[in-house]
Length: 179
Image (cartoon, rainbow, N blue to C red; front, side, top):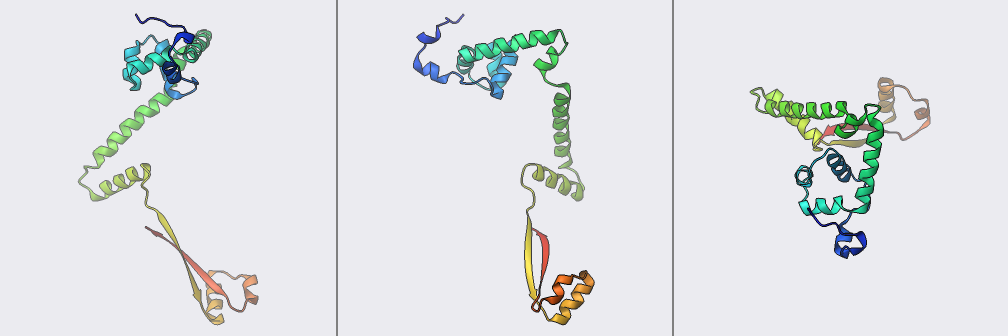
């Protein structure tokens, strides 16, 4: 069993490594796992931190206070039967995460499809979600034309009363082109 040392007797280097706030997600996860009875080694493996880092976190005064606050909050919620949800997380959120994993596995299987259109659609979808969506480029083209041609275009595109009094009109044609 490790030796417990008072905070004022700890080395400055150890104090600097201690957490400053317990609001970070990883610390909250460590608190939940610790409250569930996990051993420090198991927690270290779960959150991908070294055992010594977990030890420093778990023995810092900020962590101890946050863990005790969480345990008290959990105890009060036990009466309301909300403690399981608090520790394990919301069922719906957990289910959506599980379904998302299944969905990406399905997409990965579809990448091996014999149909080119399916492979193309799945590849595009995966790239879009990964942040590599096709960029849309907007081109603006200005065309100078005679009054007579401009009036004909107005008839086709819709009449604009304010354009009637302009002598030299310019018509802008905007076209979106995939990059």
